[in-house]
Image 1 (cartoon, rainbow, N blue to C red):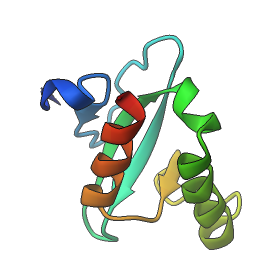
Image 2 (tube, one colour):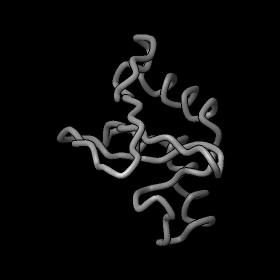
Image 3 (spheres, helix red, strand yellow):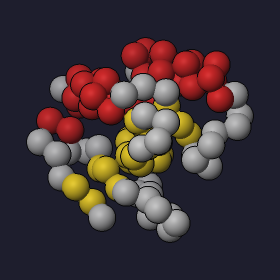
Image 4 (cartoon, rainbow, N blue to C red):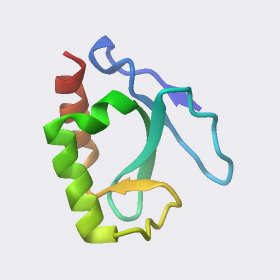
Length: 92
């Protein structure tokens, strides 16, 4: 199920992934964000990965999880609000 966000972050798609994997568009990567109990799956453009602010999040993910990400994909240790603020800034 996809949920639409304001146009500022329209390239970030939220997908609730239970036991099935949703298709990831070419040029994008799925990431898991949120509290320990309730992580949500977002699909972000690969270009976000090279931004210094996003690099900081990736560094935190490496420190916390190493190569063992509990969701099976890239898990970013931050709140959804922080993630949405960051992606909003990257979109502009």
